[in-house]
Image (cartoon, rainbow, N blue to C red; front, side, top):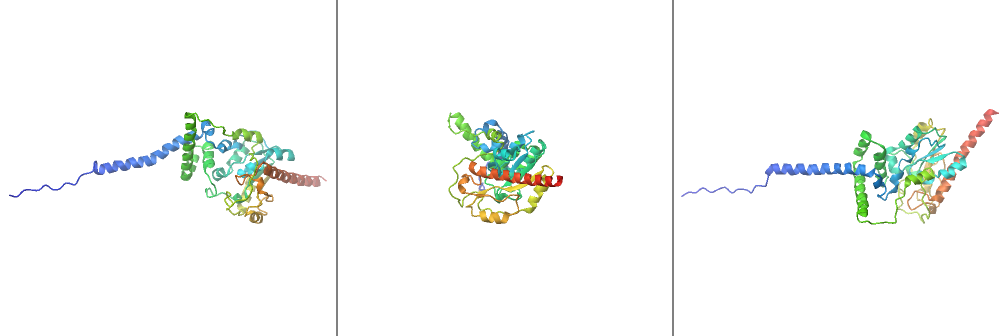
Length: 341
């Protein structure tokens, strides 16, 4: 008798191909939608007053200081990166020159994305100044190429865009800098969680967030780094590996762009430690590229957050700018006197 044998059936996976498709769609949705949800939550959160007082990062509160000045009508307007922010004290320059002075500098990461936007907004809502002074560190004395290669953190640049830009312009910046935008979102999430846990568990700390807005209002924009300073130059110092390269086209463009908006446009170098391995090279390469001479100061006059001078270093840099302006005024007075005679 011949019997038919039943063919061996392979165990089928639940759902078959349809299940694989559904799993793939679910995975894709999570990968795409979850980051978008995080961004949608993080960006509005980062703009709240609660976050700005719980993120333990006071720099965000001082961004775009110059944009808040309306009819301040400063005679001397200092703009640049954090080296200018910490080098020039208007309370020294003003009395020396008898000109109202304000420091509206932002930080390096802001410069990458916004370039001179803070200055442009300030000029649009204040009287024409006598002097616009650009000041940058020797290693940043060039046009930025909108990359982050020389910036340790994107936080301030992304935050500035979030605070002051909107619509398609801001969206295009975030999309062009996705990596940095996600770094910012991650940081916002961690800082928020840390702040929320302290509130929930009633963890009190003596450490207070510095109100940088109030501080800059009280100093006309200057940010002081208090002593003590560094004790030695270190190979690990931020940016010490970046060699200074003159950029004549950039310098010419700044002078030409702002000569119609101020009586004088100065492009100055911020001071640097005399023990920096690149100090002499910076002096040689940038000689004649700036409107001032590079000031080399003892490393003890710089804070641990290189390249920021302490308050003692800022006094020297501020007096140097005051003397530079007074020399220009004296030359101009001499020319005027000669013409009148």
